[in-house]
Image 1 (cartoon, one colour):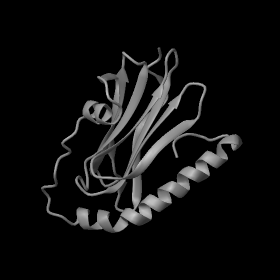
Image 2 (cartoon, rainbow, N blue to C red):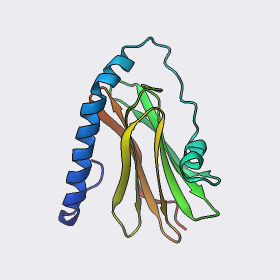
Image 3 (cartoon, helix red, strand yellow):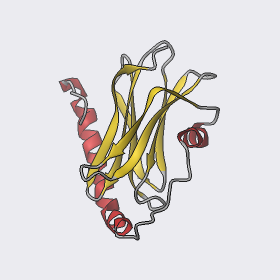
Length: 165
């Protein structure tokens, strides 16, 4: 976990950990097979803007400080997490794109926290990406993305307020 959770958010934390455990268990075999594939793994055919548009419609643009690479301790790049913005709706979209096990349904997660609220996550076993969106008109946001790599969740994000407005 990257954020410190207050006791009132303990239920959210337990729910997230239980969901991650379920995803880890169901995708461990697929991940092991995918990681044993040849060195030339498939590249992700989606951009963050395409992922947000596919899931929520509209036009999405990158924001300053809105990209973090997700790297495992062994140096393997396992994905990227992006914060995107739709100026027409005032919504932010977090897109986590996989760089490992691309094309195989394995664990991936996207999270966002809007100023004044709690972290919210979308996660599951997906082939290419996971997205989440929230309205943040006149508020700041933090974002987080995680990819299951083997049996470990690797993540990155921005854990300070940004993209205010």
